[in-house]
Length: 431
Ligand code: PYC
Image 1 (cartoon, rainbow, N blue to C red):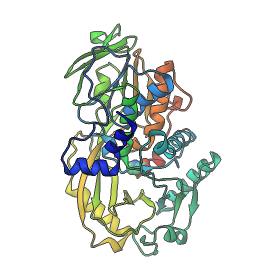
Image 2 (image 1 turned 30 degrees about the vertical axis):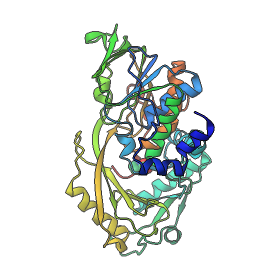
Image 3 (image 1 turned 180 degrees about the horizontal axis):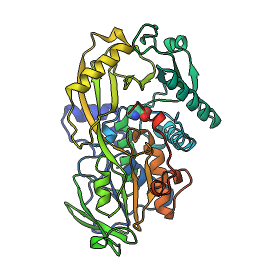
Image 4 (image 1 turned 180 degrees about the vertical axis):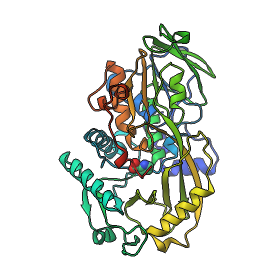
């Protein structure tokens, strides 16, 4: 297609006429037939899986790659999160890792040629108790040592940044201070999925939706069917047929441990739903992201004016993704303690996603005891913000069959070696 007709096809006017004439839209990525063999199969078509595919192709020249997803791209955690990004973690390992992700998010619109609507609006984590203040101070010091812009601020400064917060001292949970992290913010999560999908596709990666993995095929392992330690992966069985591949990467959230069992690799994960909700749109009045651990709530306002709320994970481990009235009631009560002026706002809808929680609130990444089987799992409530760096590092791990320095602390072996990366004090809200 010539340059001018391509322009006509994608220009605003071109798209407008296409819309009103009800012409079909150009496909953003191909729908290739599934081959029986690939060099690498990635399970999970969310940000992590797509980013891993993209960096495998773009950084390492490995493009005989299939990404398979049992539903549609971005249908799991990537489309259900509250789109918050930040790097103000508690452990030096966590800070370095999430900071690299923020770097990649910062240049993503240019790198992937798609507007991901990164809004670097600042991030406030409120402290309502002396012990929370101590933790925020601790985080601020760890952050500063790694050159992360993060500091403890007093209620008066908080009020300037988020005027709708009630900073009076006679509330049940008075606001005593906050960890302020100016580089934090929000990003349009769907755009991130679409950007990576389109970029991976343009490098020759095959994206297969509606393709569910039913088994991971192995040989030589000590367990039944050649699975488990000492074995090697030889492919996957899907509802669309078998794929032979010497490398399989598990980039799933929600069912990560069940899939891993298919390779005979047990993961220390329990799965809990996390619920979120959105209000009707209003004028912009909340310029930052606000998180309260004690009140189990975080909130930001979208460019459309809606408030997006999230909570802690539900207390019971389950794969059920239904919303509950208990969540809505608790959320409303807690939000009104923080911002009493919102009492007339209406909630429009709520949803849930699945969070794979590990004992130390850090992910599990890299090779496993089954040769060729890699994991990028255990993403708890922090998976979206880690998508780019995970893709970059997992691609390097697969390409070089090693554990890159940035993700070495998150190896599965840490649970047997007892070297945990305790991130609970910085993992979103009190869980
Ligand atoms: O860790 O920043 C976070 C977060 C936000 C929403 C869920 N987790």
